[in-house]
Length: 122
Image 1: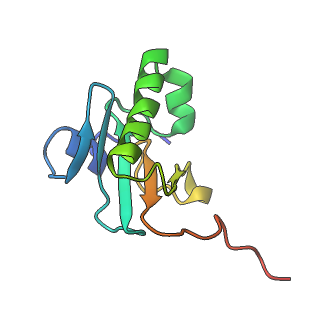
Image 2: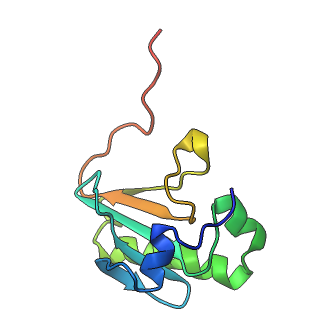
């Protein structure tokens, strides 16, 4: 999948679309999801154009990778989730239902989240 510079997250990074920002630094931007799936649902995106975690870990510098993951931790702490627990999730590609072709991590919390995946019956 090629990076689309007109994806919604690229537009948010350029300030063309507003977002309810939680955290911003040199490496990452974090903002509330517009369709929350939990009481706390925040997205953390790198500032540079990476399509997926695979693209990010293959092409980002060590500083970018470290800065991004530190931002994920900082956001979880800032939102008060470190004590009670939270889930992070990154979708990659069609089988994982990645909707936006810009690497991003979801942070979910604020209630018990249950099992990760629905188990098939049978």
